[in-house]
Image (cartoon, rainbow over all chains, first blue to last red; front, top):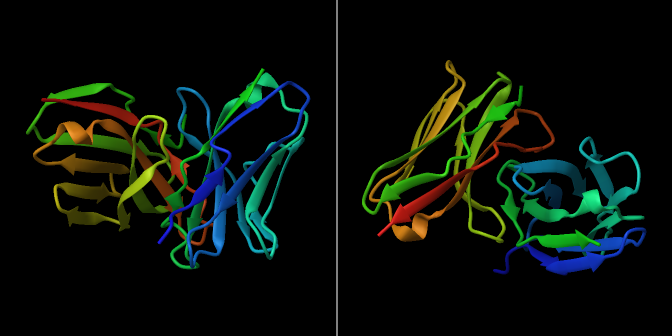
Length: 114
Length: 112
């Protein structure tokens, strides 16, 4: 049973470009979460999605960041007009419908903004 | 004040030692408590999962929750060099959307 898959594993973008991060949940999981890990900091919740629905986006920055989880295909975290402060590791997790607290993480995408 | 406090360490112990890792929290609504292990440049791996107070054991790992003190612990018996990693505690409220609040993580090194 494949785990949570994320791609790309490493992404380099210049300031002002767009970054697209993809996440495919574990088989049988319908809930997806995105977290960000800044250097020397813990993981910070960004957004929680189910298929075609954003359930909780309380951790998302108000501008430039968006997320989706379409009916078909992976979940996408999009960062527009990236700045150096966006450089971080972005992790996706998935869970079964219940319990939603039992979350399994992917290997992460390390974004570097130059 | 952070919702979840965790000493970042580093913590260095000899192989075979008993390791105690701890977190404190301020939000009395937290009911679900998790421990994750994260190797360098990898994703967090779920180790233990407990609900409310009490103990849970899984092999060499024991998780304890003391809600009255707002204090959780992870004990590792017979520690091995392969246990060297960063250990993250995480918590969530009942009825919440599944949003996990993480501690900063404690870096553990087990020396052969």
